[in-house]
Length: 441
Image (cartoon, rainbow, N blue to C red; front, side):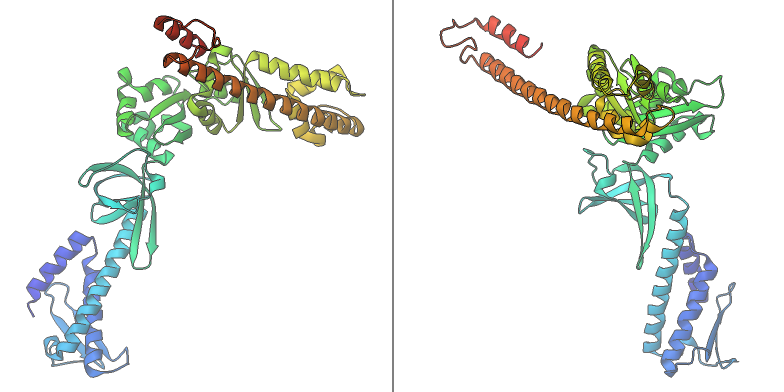
């Protein structure tokens, strides 16, 4: 046996597979003992022992504590095959243990790998010497990669599954953005700026609340960078995903107002009992506060931990007036009770019905049990009436909207006049203007 060549191969395997050389030598000793037991057909695990010199690679085989004259190469073909199988299996086990140990320490870190292929919707990525995968649920919607592309991702989880190590990657997890900020913004990695909260809809929009431990450092400005250089790098990495950076505040009212930016908030009423924030915005700020497909208010709610309702001043006042008028007619209810309810953030009959007796009978409101029970029942009846009315108004609005859209479509296509069969056809310029007027343009 060429011991020099064997030791050179072991050095190469240890270096490439990141396995301790001593562990590999132990594996060879175990494999040789198995080969000897196979050759002599013995079940005694203590009968044979093998020792390999860690410097020269010289192998010695012992039986019952005495060194054997027979060399390992003389044990025969079957023993050699047994040696090979055991050695390969032990090397694989060592490599799996090494991978598990290495990547378990890297969970939560950003890594860069080469895309291999898509397998059943999952993206397979080669990270160093390990094959990792990114499930569809952890991919950013709309992103597609080609084999050979370089991709940055977060090590989300490492699992020991049977005879292999599964490394789970993610680009959709909120921590991926957090790690990107740590890379691009030194103040974040140095803990001068703290990311207090984050809400994300991968591929569309992210809201992140930041605070600074140093009063001289502006957390928002530092994260944005000079002319937006820092945030641009992160947005480019996320293929254009919008990122809103807001200033953290321990006051929930201020934080909710910041989280709803770029919309301007007129008033915020908090109901601690329901965990609900009623936010009043001007009519021209309503669509901005809600956002496309409700995205802005939804992310603001997740960022702040409050259930956020957006209302116009008219809607807010209407709900409050309905509650006051409904409860004022209940025997035992005073103006002081109504003021206390409003101060607790209950601004509609729905809120009163939902909080129930425990809140109304508490000393903060001060109603007796009989009055509180009557208040809840009355609010419940009125809430059903209001809900039915709101549903009817919603359906009527949908009908009007469809009618307007249909009328506009006919005008733009040069169809029948919406004024009736006897109406004179308008000019093409008049059609466009009328259609724009119907569509609200």
